[in-house]
Length: 231
Image 1 (cartoon, helix red, strand yellow):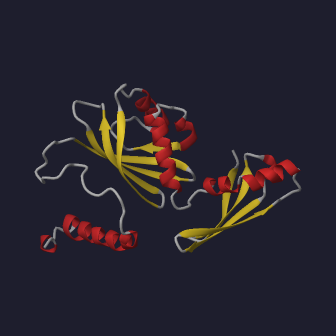
Image 2 (cartoon, helix red, strand yellow):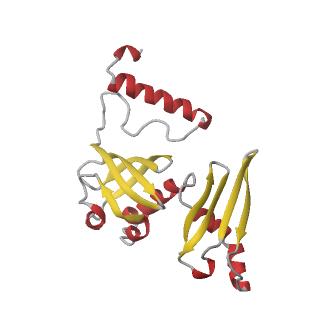
Image 3 (cartoon, rainbow, N blue to C red):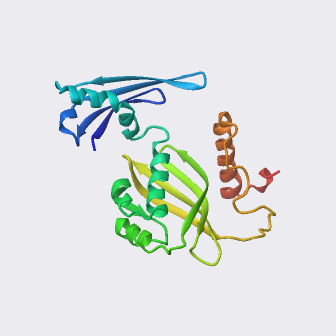
């Protein structure tokens, strides 16, 4: 698979990269995308600069695979989320241990108490999951290199486990993982189920304001102890 080096980035509208290995005929060639939001869609302009003369077949491959190059770029919005969802589905859903070699970094750091250190710990944990194990995904949140998955783990005990997994991605690889878990309770004192509530973003234009409100809650009330801010 071709390997790329980022050479231009001006979010959210410009990105460019150079092929630095993985496919010798393309080495040194550069690619560039300009994205422009227009109406309900996105206009994509694509440039490719060849470092050397290529055969007709190679030119055809360039032209056919331009979308593939766009997906392979580290750091584009959505890339971390897509990588985490694909990798965890392959590893934990399909029980495909080779997903570790494709999606996890060699120096992967694990913080969960359910797995040992590094890739060996992850491989051992994934390989020892019981036959009845499955993950029910409820919500996925992502920003930059961080992806949070909220859901239910089935098959690890007499009741499901409600879990939040936080994954960090860098250079198209999963590099770090944290989690928090609670056993399922049928009747929480709050009167609401542990995974209930909206799972769909309905007002994306309010994301920044919502984030700021939650940050203030954490800083003023949870960390600062100012209970007067609750009402």
